[in-house]
Structure formats: C-alpha cells, structure tokens
Image (cartoon, rainbow, N blue to C red; front, side, top):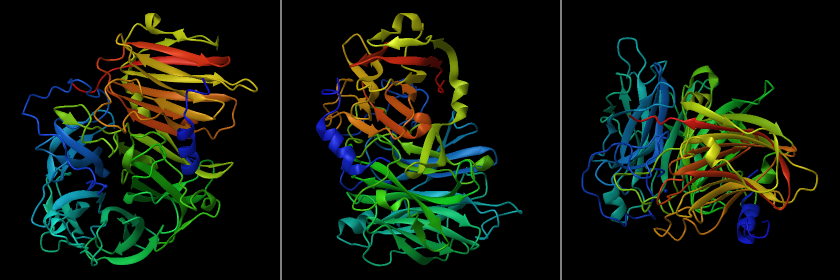
Length: 541
C-alpha cells in the first residue's frame, strides 16, 4: 500500500508546497466547448450536487460579495448566463437564512460600458459613510473589478479598474455609482489589479480594500468607499508565486483559548497549488491600518516560494469570507473547481458549484498559528438516518453497504482511528459502483499524508490534469487518535481531518452514482473507535 498509494511525485509536490485567474476570469482558460441548447432545470441532472450550492443553470465561478444582513447570507458569484463555459462576467445572486438552503435571485450586476463585472466584495455601510443610505437605513455597498475586454484585446495594460454599486432594498436591486465609477481607476499599465475585499478598520476609522496586483497584494483606504488612496504592498518576496494572485481577504481573528488578536490574509493563486492548478494560501500576522506584517513564527513557512495552504485538495479556489457574519463567526466558502479543467467538466445544463460553507478558527499549534476549517453546524439539519459501527479492529476491508440501508452518495461520516505504535500502513473510505469505478480518501501513515484518489472515479478524459495523480496533504497533528469528518455528495468529497487542521476538497464524475461504501486498511491494523454514517437529505425540491 505505502508503495503504490502515493507517488513519489506527489510527495515531492507537497514537500515543496508545505501545506502547514480575476478571480472572476481566467485568461489562460479559453472556452473550448459550445453552448448547450436551452433546457428545463430540475436540480437533479446527472452529477448535480444535492446539498451544495450550484447555479440554476449555466456557468458559475468565484463566490463574490458575501455579506450577512437582516437575517440573510448573501452569496453572489461570477456568472455567465448565456453559456456553461466562461464568458462575459455578471454577478449571480442567491440568499440563505441558514447557510444550507438557498434561494436563487435575479442577476445582481450586469456588464456595462466599463467592462465585465469581475470579483469583489460587499459590506453593510452601517455609518452611511457613502451617503448612499435612505430613510436612516444603512446601504449595502459592493465593490468589484471592471474588466475592459475590448481594451485588453487591443493590447492595453490598463484594462482593469474598481467600481462600486449600492442597494437599499436588502440586496434585491443594485444601482451602480455611474457618476463616480471607476472609483479606483487603473494606476497605469497594471494588467492585473482586481478582486477588492472590503473591511471597516475601526482603529483607524476607515475602509480598507485588499487588492490582488499581479503576484502580490496592495492595501488601499477610503473614508467613504468613493475616494481611495494606496496604503502599502505585501508579498513580493513571501508565499507562493507560481501564478497570479487573486481574491484576497483580510480579517482579524481571536486566537482560540486566548484573548490575543491576529490578522489573517487569504490569497488565492492560479496556478501554484502543490497538487496542481488553483489553490488558496494564507498568512497570519498583524495589520495596523496601513501595513500587514507576518508574525515572525509564520515567516519560515512562507519564505523561498513556500506557502501555507488552506485546503490540500484540487477543488477549493477563490474562497473568501462573509462580512458582518453574526456572533463573530468567520465563515468561508470557495468555488469547487480548478482552472485546469473548469470549462471542461462533463456537465451540461450547469457548470460548477460551491464548497460547503466552513467555520474558520485560528489556533496556536506546535509550529505556530494555523487556520482550522470545519463544516458549519447548520449542516447537521440535513441528517436523517444514522448508522453506527461498534469499536472494532480494522486490518482489511469492512463492507458497510448491505448494513447501511441507504446509498452513500449523500452522506456524512465521522470516523476515529487509534494509531498503534509504529503503524506504517494506510486506511480510509472507498466509494464504488457496479461498473468498477471507485473513489478513495484516507491516510498513509508511512508518508504521513492524507490522500484523495479519484484516478479511477469515472469520467476524466475531458482533461489530462483531472486524474493525473493522487492528491495528497500532510498530517500535522501528533495525536494517536486520527479524526476524519467526511461529506460525500453526488460528485464531490470534502475531508476535514483532525478537527479541520487538514482539509481536502475534490470533485469526481462517476458514470453512475456510487452505491457501495467500505472502509479499508492495508499494511497493518488499526482500531476503529468511532464510525457514524449519516444519510443526508438534499436541499433542492
């Protein structure tokens, strides 16, 4: 097992990466398929996720403008309503009261004479600094990147700028600030300046926007969301620079179990992820209202091209967090795909979905500050039946299919394994179908790596990059009890290991749904101390 489960190439990639394009568009991924004919959408098409958000129809990528207001979580996203491949970007829109069930709303922002509407963010302007509010109520304000495709194709290097729009009806309709847009013109011959993420910095009484600029970040400030000045730059010599930096996010967090506050800077990058293609790195440090400074303990992990990654799988990209989330929660969602093959995956009526919403926490570990991500608790409302396995020794396959009583396609698993001294084997979960297709996710103790193996999970011929290798992510915990929390949807798997210290997200496309579930162990014996399998209900009618 340890010689065949994980290739040396994959181990090398992770070692170089260290797990410890705008966002909105991808200039290197031109559409290569033709639009499909109109058809009725049922939310039950082949490969359609049943408890993840996906657009009713056509193309979707980066989540945008996530903000909580008046009891609703807003999810905007990059959307092309005329095809299921990338095209002129709009902002699609959905809302949820519980982060689980979503209501599709009309398109929020359309392209205009200044360009396509690339990625950005939205905030509640509680103090009405913008003066867009009405009747004493605060407005919602969105800031986004204008992408002038005509100028880009004409050879200009100044085709991206930043604009704003506002809403006074709970985000149902949006008015662009036409008399002032772009509020942040291109500074001159900067090809990639985009994806503004807004935050109110209370200490300095100003709005701060984090921007992706080529392969580094810039911070800008404004008193009113209209007039902007540059504060500082970050990252030219830190982190991974294998591709373009995109979709930044800057926010403070209280370190678990302490009163200490640190700042987190999320940077998405394409390409550069250790397993190939798009990925999400992050930095932990301090922000004084002008400059972001990495914590000294964090520096060794982000020097010399190294990075700390938020998710070790291939399919969690462009993720950012909700503004104004209640109870101080830091809630995150990503785009569940990868620019290596996003335009090519074998879906017809719709293309691409979002990850599960996740709750982030910041903890101080033996190697320094690290983000942990876990599925939001609201997902527990989807549980229907539960199947449990008593504590048992696991030294071979344990087939759960006949006893389960329900298909594993829509399921959640909570597993705990006790690792004996010197254990060097591997174990995990396998989904399969009658056609011999299979997906495996688990842990290789000899390499100390979690793995996600979709090399035999169904359709993959649409891209040479999709099933080229087994994806891996290191285990950091030294505990003898290894925890795996798994979610399986029709065409995806999400692993949260060791309470979220390691996460992996990957999609797959079996020719027919997986119907069989088993646990496996190779190369040694472990103790399975906890095994709960929950049947989950879908969120679409």
